[in-house]
Each structure stands twice: as C-alpha cells, then as structure tokens.
Image (cartoon, rainbow, N blue to C red):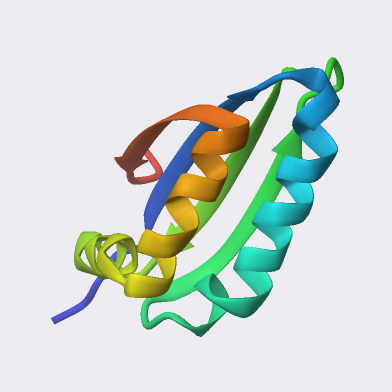
Length: 96
C-alpha cells in the first residue's frame, strides 16, 4: 500500500504584539514534539509581515498520522498554550 503525503495547514490569527512569542512557541514544539512523531515529514512557519497571523504548513504521511499527532498527550498539553496567544483554523488536504 502506498501513501500519499497529506498537507495540514493551520492558520493562526494573533495580535501583532504576540506574533514573536507565538513563533517561538511553535518552533519549540516542532523541534521537541512534532519532529518526533511518526508520519511527520516536515513543517514550515510563515509569519505575516503585518504581524497579524502565522501559518503552519506541515506535510504528513497520512490522515491517520495527523489524527495520531492531535491525540498525542504532549500535543494535547500544548494546544491550550497556543489558544492563549491565537485563534486558529485547520485544513487537511493534498497537493492538487
């Protein structure tokens, strides 16, 4: 069975004064948690020039890997910290 990479886009709205703190939090989590999870292939952070948002572009092995990431206890502990700084929406898809 072959798997095709799926793309997870998280778009986070943030107050410009909190953007740097949010980026630091996201980078730290990618380095210490996300990068250790099965099925993760890579992530990029895109910080809006006006400071109002951060977009996370991540590639995963499968939708199941994304579900496992979201259920991971380390991620569950991390999500409230993100919500303190930003609101966010997620989209899971494939390259068209």
